[in-house]
Image 1 (tube, rainbow, N blue to C red):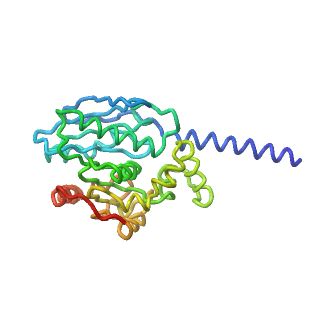
Image 2 (cartoon, one colour):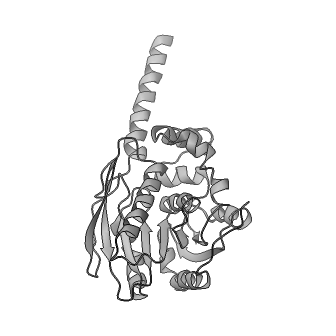
Image 3 (tube, helix red, strand yellow):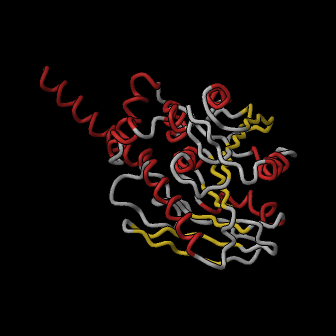
Length: 290
């Protein structure tokens, strides 16, 4: 009888492992449902582990370039909600599908934070190497997981002139909940094991535990950083702003009243916050390190 129970438990664990890999560790590859209203160029960024695909939209003024980085399980077309005000304000836009998402290639290892970081870094390389893209000032706007990955890049890459995060998780617990979506996981111990497994399968467990500690990353942003978060975000709660206010070198943290995880941009003052932040911090480098 004990053998049967052990066998049943073993089968259940294998089933749970397969379910988690398929439905949580592997983001759904969404097709583009919308396309830019402005004229755009399809771009492809070649990397050793695969190709990143996206869109480039040129503005008339060429004041700089915004890189738009989506969150887990999302894609570039979901970031179209940001595009028109940016282009109208005179900035070029590059929006991409992170590796393992949308039209970009999948990766050899499991999609992870590393996949996001590699994609962002390669996109910055691409922008700086194209003479026709206005790269005199590079701004990164990252939503959710895209925001935390962009923060990792901003802590080690001085080519970003300003970082804007929208609804960014600031703890492993919130990362776990945002990735799991509708799957409810108690963080201790299941959620913690889930995040650890996620990092192991991505091949970056030790790197994440040593180099990518969130408390270290958020305190060491090289360029001015602005965080915007909804007070009614249930997926990544407003409590995530606590560490940004009290233990980071983010220059500004703003709460908005919009509902949901994807609607900060609907706040009537969202773009005022963004563009005023950029104007007031032009040329600034954050030298304060904790």
